[in-house]
Length: 93
Image 1 (cartoon, rainbow, N blue to C red):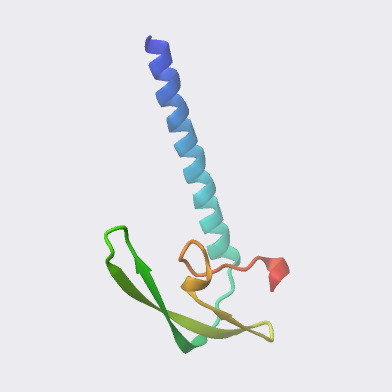
Image 2: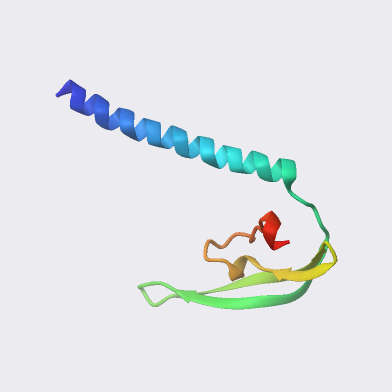
């Protein structure tokens, strides 16, 4: 019985450790290799959402235009599924 508990908690702990390492490494690579650029807000996007109780909420997201390597792009946290600012890989720049 002790071995089963050790195996379960050890497995969960190992999974969390590996997940934390991967996320930390990705953050490190982004801060090391990321490109900073300036942008300006060109639009404010309005989104409405509701819950199961029938209450609605209104969210406003900035749409930012920026130039990266002579290519104009726009980005908004609302344009991604995760609700975070989109990131671009080197091949997409």
